[in-house]
Length: 143
Image 1 (tube, helix red, strand yellow):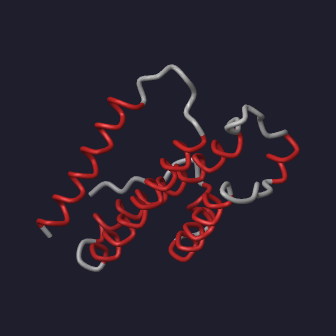
Image 2 (cartoon, helix red, strand yellow):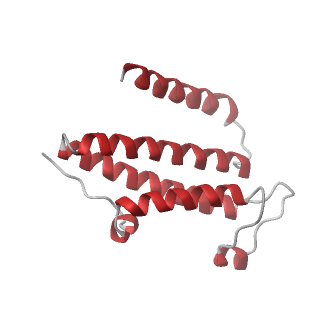
Image 3 (cartoon, rainbow, N blue to C red):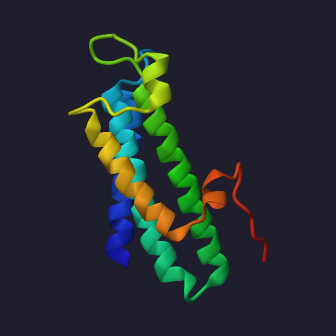
């Protein structure tokens, strides 16, 4: 357990370093950065999934909070996925409204984020309800 928390702290430090060194530009976030952020949030969601499964059986209240956390992480991944597809491409072209409305994959390498997102969607739908996923806020449990 101690090694796991050290690795999480290391990853958090790496994110803080990236934030302080790479995100100081006044330029909009690139599609590559949005893809990397999506990948990170999905990885964090998987980590919280495992923590939820380990915790729920022993501490229901903490497990419920972790479950709500994974829903929020899913909602974050969903927004990052949408942001990616509405952000300008490397050549400066912006996606058309029609293409965004149809939610059509753009092909490789842009399809990578979609494949990751679909896998994450499958996992989250196995442990939540559609109502949970689309609720404006998750329920807070006070004990």
